Image (tube, rainbow, N blue to C red; front, top):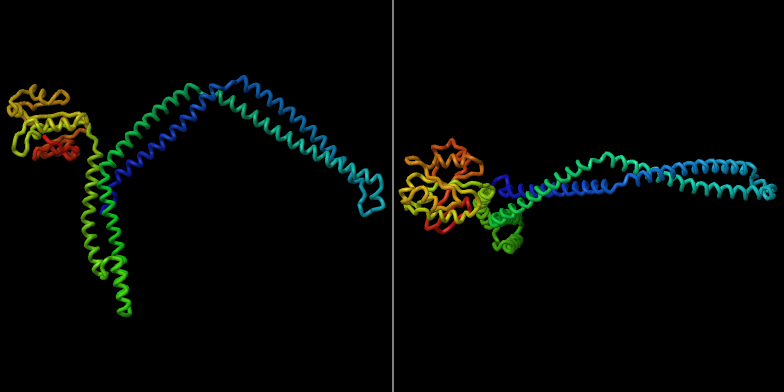
Amino acid sequence: MNAISPLEPLQRRRSRIKRLTEQHRAMQETQRALRDSIESHKAFEPEVELGKIKRFESTSVGLSQKIADEEVYKANLENRLKDTRAAQTNPLVFWKFFTAEQKRLRVEASRLRKEISSVNEHLMSDNEALSKARSDLSSTQKRISEHECFNLNEAETQLAAIQQKTRQIDSDLAAAKAELKRIEEKIRPHSQELDRLESELETFNSDIAKADRFDRDLTAAENSYERAMIHQECEEKFGSGSPRHVINDRRGKIRRLENNIPKVERRIRDELKKLDRTISHLVIDGNNACYEGQSFIGLRGISALLGALGDRFKVTIVFDASIRAMLKTDNQGVEKLLGAKVATHVAPTKTAADEYLMKLAGKGKNAFVLSNDRFAEYHDYDVVKSRRVLRFLIADGMFMANELDISIRI
């Protein structure tokens, strides 16, 4: 079994979609922040903010003076309370405690405490108001400073660039999702079969473990009754009372699964490789595609192929010079038969098309050759080295190119 999952290319695509989604979300958040900053800058009124600063400064000065006066007044009250307490008699000296003077001092002390408490409340309220005024002043000064430093043109340019990048991510994300959906639909029957086989493998291994436990219990059984009960339990579980029979049966099934699972994995890899391939230009070996076995069929196969390909990618067809005699026409006649959408070339007299195929397909990594030739003598060409030669089969009136997902009647 291969350590790397055959579905790893799908996981890679899902990870890319996740990254693109996160990038898109981040871009949208950046756009919102920039728009808010631009709108805030345009709505900002410096004169209004400067007026606020004057009010906050005036309020701060007034509150500071008021708090200072209250602190002085509080200190005066506390000194008076201290003197009043000093003049009061200890309650233990009861013959003085109930005199008119002592009663007056107690009333005065109570009044002073209440007055101090009231002043403390005012001080707390005024300090909070002063703190808020200073905070508002600082915030307003900061807004004015930020407004003066804000570069509107730069922000609008940055927003436009981010919007463009977001649109590109939108496009990439849509394409990635469409590609993943297309591939998943193609792979689903094979991945479901792989899941089924792997589930069976897990079940059979579990059966072996349970049957092996029954077998050990049989060995450890002390009498025929215990063995009969174990056989009965085994039969209820597996339909056979013999643990060894179950083990041998499951091992045989596991061997078949272990033979079949790699085949399905290989099929998945082959399909994913095919689906992962990007073809922008297909260069067709024209003469190759004019034969069904040893029988010359003219352009029937190529015409059917072109119809199936549609506009999937650019198509170029290269023929040997012998095609003119075979079709009893000239170069223009061949081109006319295949239509204007296809680039058609006929190799010069006494030359083969092979090397022209190599050169035409060597212009980019997404250019592929469709031919059944091995091109052994052209091993140095990149199209051969990078295995960009696709095969096909014409048989029983069918044109089949598996790597292009084409199977059509000609």
